Length: 100
Image (cartoon, rainbow, N blue to C red; front, side, top):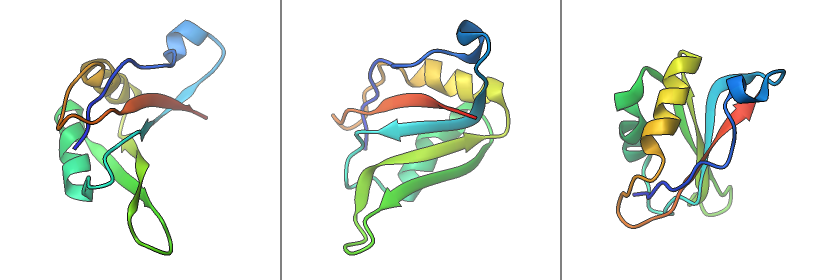
């Protein structure tokens, strides 16, 4: 349950010296997004090694953000480009490549 809007980050090629991992930070997700929905949303773009939603320790409810890890940088960049501006269940989400 998410809507993905403009990516606010630069690729590793544009930054030159900075190197990004294959992990993407996704935030402003619906609190009702399930682990299965989250992984399924990003699976079409490559091999998802890990899709993890962060949860509140006391309530168990999702915090509205998570991480997706791909097996290659190309897959992560493909997912970022494809999800930019995509609408899903009227929720906003922003994607950021994670620096290493």
